Amino acid sequence: MPNDANVIGRNVAWWRNQRGWSQSELVTRLQLLGDINMTRDKLANIEIQRCVATCKQIEFFAEVFGIKEQDLFPKKRHFVGKEDSIKLHDFTRQRRPSLASQK
Image (cartoon, rainbow, N blue to C red; front, side, top):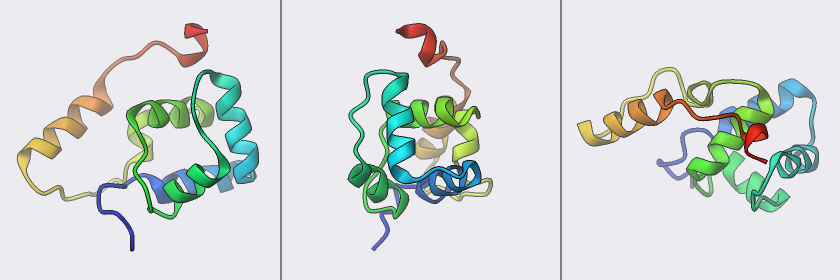
């Protein structure tokens, strides 16, 4: 059963498929970006919404796909409670240095 807290899994799979990458290829590309503990099994569980991606994983997904972090989130999402909505708003609007520049 999908975890309601995982709102990016399907979009990660969509972006990966748009690039023509296998799960193993995406994992390799993520690992080349820097220190991320990602396996093909973890990626599969994120994509099928069995587990939640961490903030660091979301940053790496956005970097490897060349997109903004907010592009990983569904366009229309109704969150339960104001607190969750504020957290998502703040997270997607934070400016972070490029992961490649942190090596």
